[in-house]
Length: 504
Ligand code: FES
Image 1 (cartoon, rainbow, N blue to C red):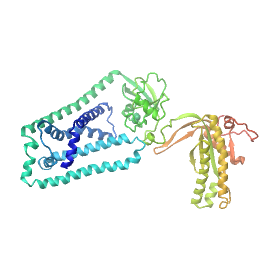
Image 2 (spheres, rainbow, N blue to C red):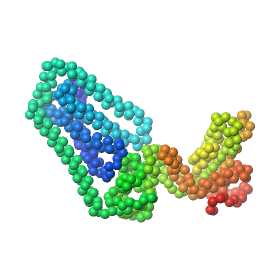
Image 3 (tube, helix red, strand yellow):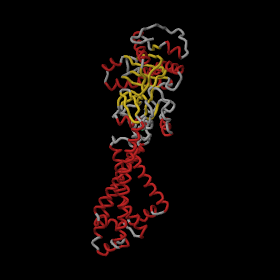
């Protein structure tokens, strides 16, 4: 340990090390006080509360050790060593020993939470999390084992009076006057630090008074209107009135899960900051001026708003599947494909065989959809809803859907040939194709949220697919899909049908 101390000193007692360490400590500590000032409510998640309380307690817990170990050598050339320090912590001042262990754990947990809150929004985090966890547990455990084991060594060495005399010599621990000076410095630091925290709370009180004088504004949510002082962010207002609102990063402008859509007049809204624009760009929402981050927007006048993501949105919304799925109305071509006769098949065959055949069928259909340029969107039993036009114009979307219908027929034909010997009845199917305006968005609850399309167009597509049974054909497509694709009916049989509940 004494040998290792040489490297430690060479780094942190050097000029670059000193210039790095102490300004970093001062800036980090000041940011903690700033966070305490900025926070408008104290309804924190456990990690946030632990992070801040532990962070604020580190200077108070660490100052005795830091002042003794750094100022003593700097002011009077005192020679510090692990042996002398451990003797002090284990035998002379065991209360300082407990404090040293406490500050190690507090600082380590504070650092781990900080790194976790920073990295968990990165897409690679799930992959490296197990490794980080091993490091987070092992490093302090090994450090504390070292502290214990060397403490035992020091207890044995303390049987030798000459060793103790050396550790307690003025060259190591200073004269009584020098120790009193260090103690004074420590007490003054603690007083100043407590004063700084008190000043932060004073500043918070002054801010509340000033905000009350500036007046109140109304924020209208879908189910409630609240009155809040000007200057509060929308997210802070939600928390203050216990309105559920997603906020994975805790309002730091990193995750985008708090985003809202502002309705009505937006001319008096403050312009988005560079940070807000950056985060909105990352999720593909910067082009829409109605979309803002609730944690960054501090409205100065009344607004109406709708939170875009469900309150329970988690990190998967940040780096996962849901990042571009804002609810919107758009033109899409839809295709429903359903396997015929799967119920009878399930009655006659083993469950494994039935699932195997249905999966092969859905794979053949999905492959056709993707090759045509569409997206297999939802699997319902032995059926599939496919969407076309998510990234193309409407004419291309309809042509892709018609193309996919033809390719499904080809793929299933191929499947039937493969199963010709084992299957007595070939696989049959029905397809409905239609196009029109749909509403797209993320639908579901908690972990089971999927991007899908809703609306009359989707219902009509499903009805057209059902009609294939009545009309005894494989595909029924709508006039709208055919015309938008720019194709002539060219002899295809056509008929007019009435669909229940559909308003043409
Ligand atoms: S809460 Fe994370 S960006 Fe607003």
